[in-house]
Image: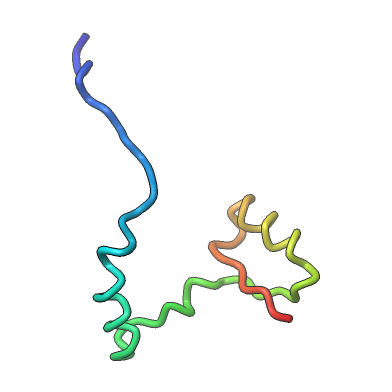
Length: 65
C-alpha cells in the first residue's frame, strides 16, 4: 500500500482571498479580465454558448442582449 495516505481534494477556489489584489490590478490597468471571454454570442444563443464551453471550444462565453 505505497502512497495510501495521499489524497487529492478539490473544491471552489478561495476567491475572496485574492479579490482585493485582483481588483487593484484591474483598476491599475495591469491586467485585463475581459480577455477571459473568448466567445461572444447574442443572448438568444445561450444554449450554444454553454455547449461551446462544455466541449472546450470556449473558455468563457459573453452573451450580448
